[in-house]
Amino acid sequence: MLDYDDTGFRRDGAPHRIVSGALHYFRVHPDLWDDRLRRLRALGANTVDTYIPWNFHELPSGEVDFTGWRDIARFVRLAQTRDLDVILRPGPYICAEWEFGGLPARLLAAGGMRLRSSDPAFLAEVDGWFDALAPELLPLLAGRGGPVVAVQVENEYGSYGNDAAYLAHLRDGLVTRGVDCLLFTTDGSEDYMQQGGAIPGLLATATFGSRAPERFEVLRRQQPKGPLAAMEFWIGWFDRTGEPHHVRDAEESARSLDELLATGASVNLYMAHGGTNFGFWAGANHSGANPYDSGYEPTVTSYDYDAPIGEAGELTEKFHALRAVIGRYVPLPEGELPELPARLTPRQLDRPTGRARLLDSLDALSAPVRRTAPEPMENVGQSLGLIHYRTHVPGPRPAMPLRIDGIGDRAQVFADGRPIGVLDRNTPGETVPLETGPAGVTLDILVEALGRTNYGPQMDDRKGIGRGVSHDRQRLFGWEIRPLPLTDLDALVFDGTTGVDDGDPAFHRFETDLEAPADAFVALPAWGRGLLWLNGFLLGRYTHEGPQRTLYAPGPLWRAGRNTLVVLEFDRHGEVLELRDRPDLGDTTRAPSADY
Image (cartoon, rainbow, N blue to C red; front, side, top):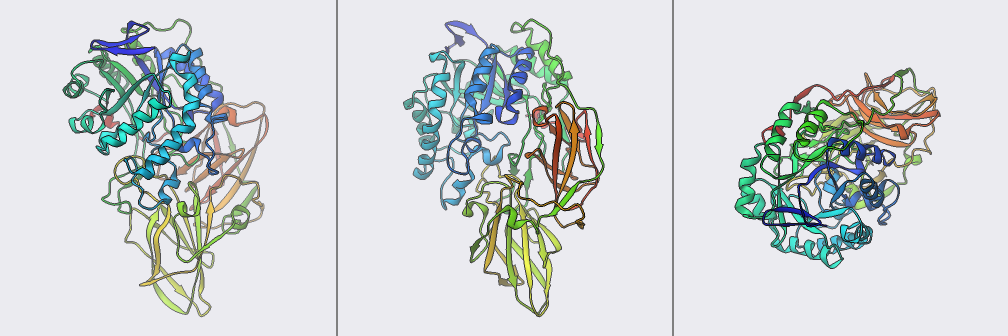
């Protein structure tokens, strides 16, 4: 059991220092969980920390799932076999650069619900999540023979609000459901953040990336006694679309860690292993004054984070530098360091074996719903993916501006199937000209959702079209809406002779045979932006904007024999895919965590 007194942590009654590493099971293929935990232990960590994203476990059906990739109990038990304690952070909000900070998107369909507050409607939803989660967690607690020594309440709440009744409800909700291990809070290392997120009677911890003695002074002003802990010590940073890949110098990171551990404090390295935002799970930040202002910044597919254990399991220069520091404070495990997992021999796939236009495939992908006005995807029961809108605009009309109010996040516009422009939420005043003949035109709008905001006040981030569509000053009504979650592509009909023009979204199928599965990195030179599936599994998004130039395709997703890759390209169609044996995360810049 983990506990603490005025002097520090105690484990089973003896003085104890937590040296933890963040490793998210939901960002790692489950067949690789044990490999990554083994690497974490080899780093010198005695504890693993993970969030539990509510929206990852709650299926579109409403069922809460704890099987397969969502089998948190299996992950925790594997950690125990690797001699690691476990810290769990079940939210309900997690941030983590994860879609909507871990909250289910359906909450946005309930108009007026105040997220992350004591609004009774939100508390009722949270209670349902805790009711489903508690039976999974209780057998894993240290008091019952499991490795879970601590559970976090909410996450950096002081950066968002100061609703003490909300925090008390979460604390009481965990306790009354039987969570009897150490409970704690985590907040930024500023006074107002610690004040807003603290819960009386619970241990407070801090998040920062540098200058540990100075940061701990803030924590001590709020909590004069007890252990000092950096529950997120940022040793890298996440990447946003169109910006360089963030890196932090290995030796500088090691010096900062040494400075922290020299204070006698405990630490959780964020991230020890970042992993991947597979599928549509990457989140976003937003710096605007309201949800539809410019300032929207989507996170990329890779969550490498410049962590000591790379996205594909690499033991980096930073791994060795941090391991040397950790070894001065806690015993390092004996034995050889793990070897790099096997990688495919590079090859090029020269031409697709089939194509399918997206606009020709709508019936195969989705059934339409009809609404008077366009509605966001949450209102039609959809959480992730694309959403398509269609209406008829009568004519004749001269070219007049077509405006979309409330885009979430990128809209491609078509007149009678012909692409006429792209509108983006970061340029909310832009329009595209639309002219109609005597028979009018069929207007199609395909909206790509790029991840709901996961941090800050603008979390009411609805996707699709949130307000309406106007031709000049006239609102357009009478819409057919098709949710396109793209969870199953089996009904697509690929035609080997179909030609596609740039700006006309289309699926491209590639095939390749392997003798044995291994890790690979898929590059799409000369392509524009889109999505990539491997054997039916969505690896994630790619874009020519960068910084990421390859998508990680872990070995367990490949198979001996025939493998199928499907590209959905929105803008600029290429002809070639490359399977590489090393990642390319783009040009680099200094991570801001070195100053935070």
